[in-house]
Image (cartoon, rainbow, N blue to C red; front, side, top):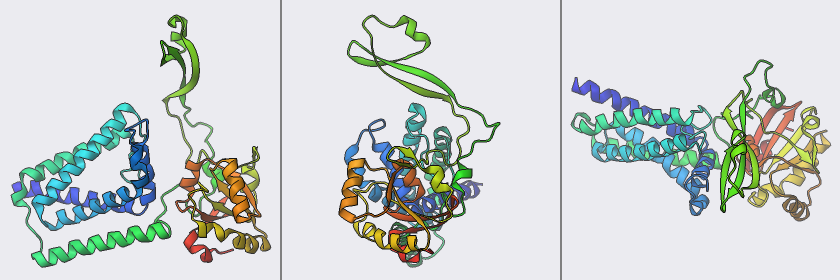
Length: 366
């Protein structure tokens, strides 16, 4: 009985860590964006970590996979279980903090493949913690599957393969695209809201400065405002989230005018996606004019989408001699469209037909 109660948690924890880690390793940039949220001001306010979130993300997901492999193999079980315990305690704290204070809506535990609410993520980590504690108190029943030399080779092989996978997806594209803009998606249809879809319940919140401190008041509380309260701002607080379509923030503007419908109605469109022109790869941007010439000669409408300010767009136009339209789109939406900065996306009447990294621009099927 002791053996069974140890081996089941061993399989469960090991396989879950490997699956969770590989999903995030498939898209480490996406996981780094999630870490940005944790290090931002509303959460832990540690902006000095933000420049290193990609490195932290890669380290964590590779460790996650390798620890799962080590647990299944029974390799250095004492060290492995201690590492798993410390890691899951960290994850449990983060997911509890996110859920209790409602600051991060999705922990990113399974990337874009599976979205969990904060409380679901916290519950998942509690289950993992329970099973790891079982392993912790039953370490003597975890036996290695192979001889030490073979075990070491297998662990090192998993480390090398994970490192190579991380390198590959960062310099090309994720091996599997789980995002709303994957190839085959019709953007217009993905933006539609069904007639009978549940609607969000929103409460108006008013912010007043009271004795030098900003305080929030509901509409009902406005009748009892403290004396001398000064109005600062108003915001909408979602009480119950209604139906949210897979794509809900894709809006393209040119000089303040909405161009979304026009672009989604065209047969041939090449979009150059650069969410931040100041951080975009220089060689990638230098390829755009040649791509524009080739694409426009074949009847394509070409436009650059960016979340950068008008001043930055103007500077980039001058620096790179862009001959195509530069449209504004929310940077967060563009990060979801594609991770590379820049990347290239082909549309056919609003349907995504191809997406390539700037390193693979020669593979565009114009």
